Image 1: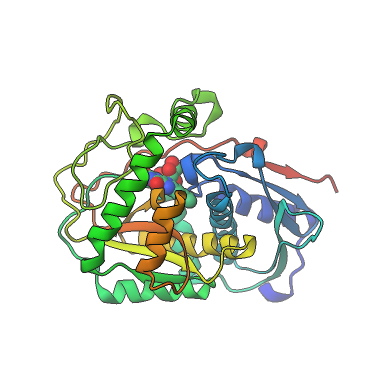
Image 2: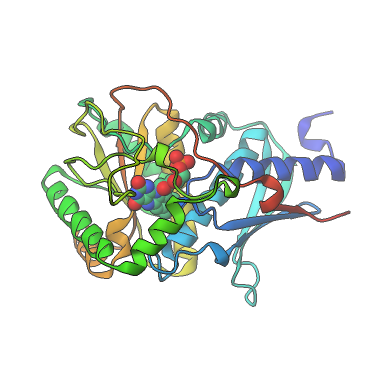
Length: 334
Ligand SMILES: Cc1cc2nc3c(=O)[nH]c(=O)nc-3n(C[C@H](O)[C@H](O)[C@H](O)COP(=O)(O)O)c2cc1C
């Protein structure tokens, strides 16, 4: 019997969808809030936003919330393509259910997509690497491939040219300063950087980097600088590329698809041996976001900046904890 004609039992269908949801638990999210839940029923897998995990100060408009959920959606899609399944995806399928972000319908078994398999393998290796990258330059060919993957997901990629990098640095630095002067920001940062271990979320000190002069500043998660577990290391980000994922609008659907594009960028980059680090301060504060928009020649709305490069010392960073599958994924009884 060919793979295309075999019908899965309901138990197998649930197992396939649950495995995809489990793979998506490794998705990166703002402050590692992991603001989503999954629900499987029959041959569908539904993604909902978990608004109890929304960062009300850092992300007042919920942009990074939806981008984070879009990343989880793309991780699940990638896992299904890698496992050899066709899917159809409805985004915002219920007009009266704004928290229901996507419904994935499992389709026929098809030959596994080798590119998706490489990217699915990268799900488990990808880390946000806040250390400085080295001199090795990210090639034009690589950036072109990354752009194609981002565009395939319905967003755009701006590769920040050398003469715009000081502008990105100043914009990020100003946004960070404005946030650090805001007591509500400090309280939210504290809440998500001093999580009890059993919560398995938030940003642990082991993944933070000590403040240092950087080409573009990296978020200072520890304002007192005392507990960051990493130093920037020997690199100086000389070969790093800075990119901005953007879209033509910032309606919820644009942001969700923007997240899918960010995931494609991060997973392809990881599969190709690059290290990656999102930088969102400049999009969190309104006027720096407008400055970033100017860097895009007003062609679109910036979703997220990302630093890409080759690490100088490459021991794999430890994985940052994730919530238990049992707390995130519910399975309807048949
Ligand atoms: C939308 C979004 C925004 C983020 N913003 C930042 C940021 O500004 N600075 C930073 O160091 N990390 C940022 N991150 C990385 C997260 O903190 C990181 O994904 C999370 O802590 C989990 O760690 P991991 O990516 O190593 O699995 C961001 C991630 C996402 C998805």
